[in-house]
Every structure is written in structure tokens, then in C-alpha cells.
Image (cartoon, rainbow, N blue to C red):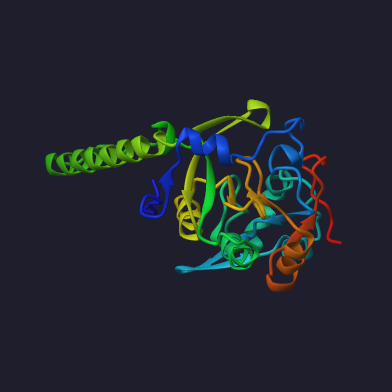
Length: 265
């Protein structure tokens, strides 16, 4: 379990709030872009999650374009990263994150989107209900085998971990459950928060999977199976994202297959 804790920055939403603020589901087949990010915006983009290089504690983002240029192989589908396999070790240390919003993408998005809403601190955040610490699962801490002292220490650590896991699961489980999105293929817990909450969920490695401001000016969506994040917003806001950030953005439309990766325009 990550040390990041969204609780100081987010509040579980009530069922009444969920009915009022949850983006209305539309008749878009699961697997289309419009089943991940809501319809009704003027423009859409996918922001590709970067691969990473590590130098001690320093993380360096590596774009898909740089990987393609280095290896001379196209990446047109999420599975292509797995096919690169051994070749990747010459270029990066970690493939793009799937199912969570990396800070390298979250921070530039927040910088622009914060200015593109009349409610810059009142945001809604949907987190997939299947993450281990929300559903109550997760890896157990081994007790160790060497000495009685080591076993006692491991038991105490396991006890603290279970208490923290259970406390977090109770907190997250108190949030309204949304099960009418993506034809019911995804269920989300709904929270209220702002930029710090978005970053905290991302640092924890659990979403955020949908977030949007109270005025509905834009929406950001990260599906649990994809190494990119969708943004729906006005055309002017998308223009600002392209002008003010280094993000690797690709044009998409709501009726496209989610597995499609368009070449750069």
C-alpha cells in the first residue's frame, strides 16, 4: 500500500450528491472512448502516459515518440509495449502506467484545467471500486522465519498494516457507489476534493479514474486498462493544453475504439 493518503484532501460524497453531479451515462458501447469520458464536450484528446527512467530518486519521463525513435518500432496499441519486451531495457526502466494517473501527466493537466473552470477548488472525483485497498484486498505482509523477535516485529507490522487497510477501506467504502457508467462495466466511488486530492489518489496508485469541476467545464478520465488519459473540454481549453504543456496529446473522438492509438498529427 502506498504511503500517499487522500483522506486529508478528499471527502466521500453522498448518494444525493452523486445523483446531482455524476455525469449522466449515455448509450455508448463499452470499449468506445465515449464510454470512458462523457459526451458533450467540444474537443477530446488522449494524453499518453510516459515511460520512465530512474536515476536514484529522480524520475525522468520518456515520451512514446522518443521510444519509437530509439527502437524504430511503432506503438499503435497498449499491447505493443509488451511486445517490445527485452528491447525496452535499452531505453526505459518502466513502461507507461496503466489504470492510474501518473504525476507527470496530472500536474500539467491541473495547471491548465485549474484556469479553465469557475470552480477551481470544487471538483468531483470517481475512483474505481476494484482497487485492493478500497475493496478490502491487497497483499499481506509475510511474518518472517528467522527469529522469534523477527516474527514478533513482523506480526506488529502486519497488524498495523491491517488496521490501516481496514480504516482506509471503511473511509472509501462510505462514498457513494456509482454503478451505472460504461454499461455497468465499471463501478466507482465518488469523492469531493480538488487538485491535491487528484494528486493524492494518483500517488497512491489508485486512480483517479474520473474527475471534473463542479461547473462541468471539462472532464478527465483514466480507464483501469489503458496507458493514457482522456480529456474532454472546450476547443479553447484543449488548445491551451497543447500550447502550455509538454504532454503527448492525440486527437480522439467519442466513437473511436479505446485501444486505438492515432499517430501524431
